[in-house]
Length: 66
Image (cartoon, rainbow, N blue to C red; front, side, top):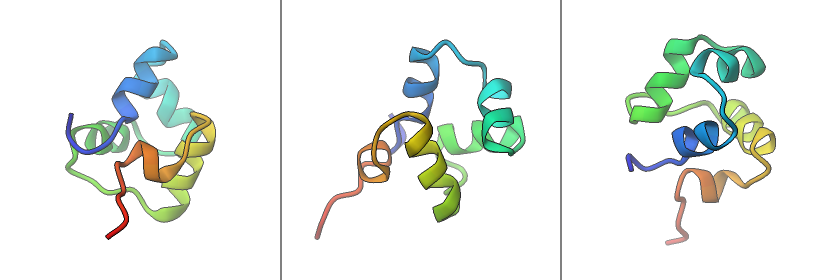
């Protein structure tokens, strides 16, 4: 895994990248870049993704307290 669970959460719901992108108001390329770790989403997008998948930003992006 590349530091986030977006792909796993998306595929569990049987959504395509295009479908998730449409739900989030971003491009399919943005979803792909987030999934492979080339792009870090903005805080509002990260929160929207977490709400969509009924999880937390911390869990989805493996944020650990220091």
